[in-house]
Length: 272
Ligand code: HPA
Image (cartoon, rainbow, N blue to C red; front, side, top):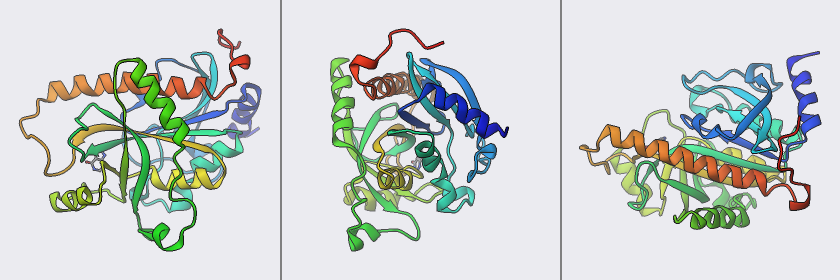
């Protein structure tokens, strides 16, 4: 049996409803996840191994606080040279494996001054500046322009409020990368009401929405976007902030996994 067929058997036994894509440097958010099986991207039909250092490139299945979940550790990026149909192959894999809900996470630069390094943002919309699709939704009204579920945004905000924090729901500008933006580009994006900027997520969110998945997006703000930064920002402080943000992210992911299962079906103990 192929590694993917073997993996799919474990998935079928656990029947996860939620799939999570963990972006760069966010693997530390998985403290509550117990892995049961995993497969490398290179062994998944339609995917290829990632080329970016620090992107795990594997798919795991297991339980998040006792609730079955699929977890993509790393993703494929357009800037690595992969065509969009390969970049979004992870999403079709999640659908094929039975996921109903998809949570996309990423690292992003903060444009909105309310988003300091170490902060989180729920994505409520995106500006897709990705070739060859830039601005096409405006022209075609293809119904994909609002893939992020308002009820999942509310669930994340109420989780944060219960912990004494506010969660900004903002606009993510998706650019191809791999280079960071120029300060002039960031000023232009700020004028377009972008709150954060990054190099992923938008195309995956649209593919998931097209396939009928319920979609949530969370940005972890790792830096102020180009030209906005206080150059005296203390590196140790950024690391502390990032750690806090990753713990917060873990809490939010747990909330989204748990409530994808109707209350009556939830188990308090992990399955054997
Ligand atoms: N720009 C684009 N992508 C990013 C950034 C940024 O400032 N930070 C993390 N990913």
